[in-house]
Amino acid sequence: QVQLVESGGGLVQPGGSLRLSCAASGSIFSIRNMGWYRQALGKQRELVASITRGGSTNYADSVKGRFTISRDNAKKTVYLQMNSLKPEDTAVYYCNADILVTISKAENHWGQGTQVTVSS
Image (cartoon, rainbow, N blue to C red; front, side):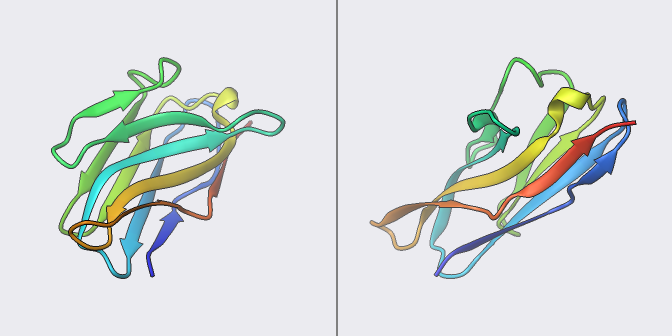
């Protein structure tokens, strides 16, 4: 059974920084794409950033230049460094991963979510 566990959320002032982490555990053969999504109150969940196993990245326009996604394949962990945070970044942030649980079976998993609040 695969689990994604996020950490690093919290309350930060505008202009501040936070670093989110998401560690995968369980029966894992390999991890393909990993990503971070967010869902603000009353809004749909949206992609923030994604990264392939080889390190290619993709960002939402709203976070380009401020957020950086990275991963450590050996630790089965993905990170999201968030700088210059704005009140509109306030949301629950979710980790997502495409995981090969065997050489031929892929599953998509979500973390439980971590709250990020940007407010003075």
